[in-house]
Image 1 (cartoon, rainbow, N blue to C red):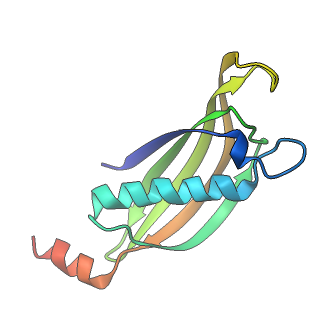
Image 2: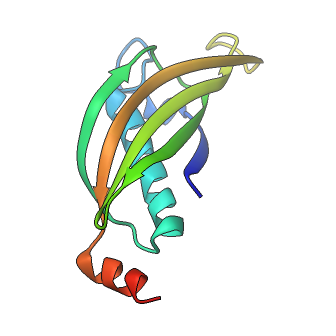
Amino acid sequence: MENFSLKIRVSFSDVHYGSNIVSNSFITKMFGDAITGFMGIYDGNESLLQSWDEVSFLAPVLPGDFLEINVYLYKESQLKRYFEVEAKRFLKLENLSNSNLLSCDQVVARGKAIAVIPFEVYKKRKNK
């Protein structure tokens, strides 16, 4: 397995700003949750996030958006996993005053991350 996807719906309770825009930290948290899901399956441990790199927020995220968070493992070493992450909007509200959904395909954020596994996990995995 070299990738992992997480699909979510953005709620009105996730709005952070007066103009009904969701904070970029929400997307960063979703990136972290998707990496944690990947690591749980791949290494059997949640791991620790070491760093973010080249994170770009390309479009505002609004309540009612449906996002797919994709994580791609592109490199690994004994204790580190290197990821590319991407958030894509695949459904959005027609407008905030009704519940009509429109299909779309728009990348709203992307970046890179490094996660570190505990040495004990590496030793256990190596001895299998």
